[in-house]
Each structure stands twice: as structure tokens, then as C-alpha cells.
Image 1 (cartoon, one colour):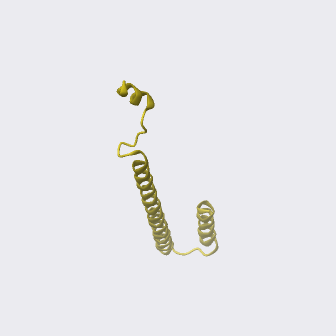
Image 2 (image 1 turned 30 degrees about the horizontal axis):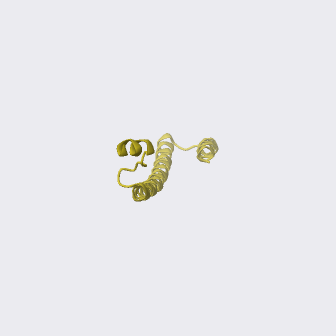
Image 3 (image 1 turned 120 degrees about the vertical axis):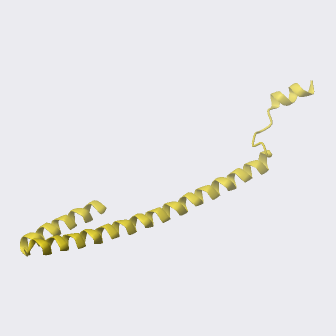
Length: 92
């Protein structure tokens, strides 16, 4: 999706330059303004992706903590199951 947006923007810029040529300084200023807009849009999208990934990571941490607590409650604080071989060896 971003690839299509990128190539569409490139094609639009090239067509715009070919159809309505301006003085070099005006064209440079316009291109700089467009580049700044694209850069701001890209930064906004990156910030949104970081925010989403941060919440997903936090959900994963919470799930891991919940699972760890359940395991500890089920098997004790060591998190290991009793070994029947060790238990019978200790009783002899």
C-alpha cells in the first residue's frame, strides 16, 4: 500500500513538473515543501506504528505475567513439577 502511494506521488510530481514548468527557484521551493509534507506524514505513520507496537508488547508482557502466575500457583513457586523418581528415592 505504501509502495503504491510512493510511486503515485513520484508520478504526480514528474507529471506536474512536465505540465506546468516554473522558474527553478519556485520548483525547488515547491519540491522542498512537498518533501517536508511527505516527511511529516511518514513520521506520523511511524509514531502511530510505534504506539501500536508498544501496546501490543505491553499486552504480551501482561499475558506472560498472568501465565507465569498461574503456573506458579499450580505448581508452586519453583515452577517445576514434582519428579516421582526423586520422591521415591528420598523415601527409601
